[in-house]
Image (cartoon, rainbow, N blue to C red; front, side, top):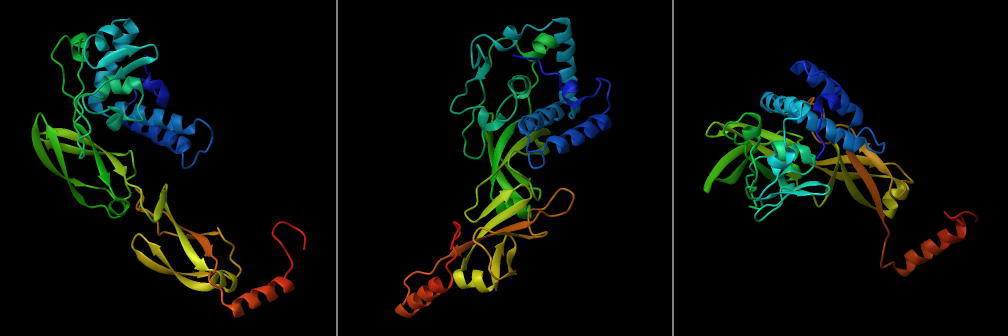
Length: 322
């Protein structure tokens, strides 16, 4: 398994302070964010930058990582002893994999590298649907190899499933966990505009211990989220598209009136500014409205004669020629 140099990923020195690390992360995150950068490899680079900041931006994780970094440079860590042996950690030709009782650690730690998961994945707490279990660890513990002391329990993590409306409004939501065989109930404050994959930290929520929740926003039957924008498909009649009309458009906070210009083509998309998802900077994304022209059916004889006359008068074809 390759050792990750998170300082190199962020382009900072090991002596960099928290502000320098935060500035480097924000700069690289904006540069490689998949909503902005469509180049091949940008999304993977964004994930790598985010992973580095998850470690270096947390004082406890950074201190732990620095110990591993020094041991790695000295050649003082036996990776096989650390993650080998009996139990759920297994070494494979491609690296390390984790087996769990009743679930897969990918449910909770998906999106991070093997290196991050091996060192910082820790104990896993089942989400609301109870899919996860604590991984069985074999071989020597990290603290035993680096500190020759007792193992440190990682903060519990769980998955929080919410609706798009809950992500839009932001609200409190109850969450049930099982920790060491005991049922625990928490009230989670959902921040407005939160996205799938983002983490919520509940400071000291379990007897003084932090809890980290990975948010999963469920698909919506009507709206499709695109970054901070929200797309909706709007059916209109043939006459509305041809002659123009004022139509009612659904949004996440109710309906609004929009004017469709005459001769609007099927598939055309309009943008309603500031009616999308809330942003962290207190702004809003946009509402995108994609027109779907619905052709009439069950034509009367008179209507058929009307369209036959139109066909005679207008011989053009979208395929070219007349």
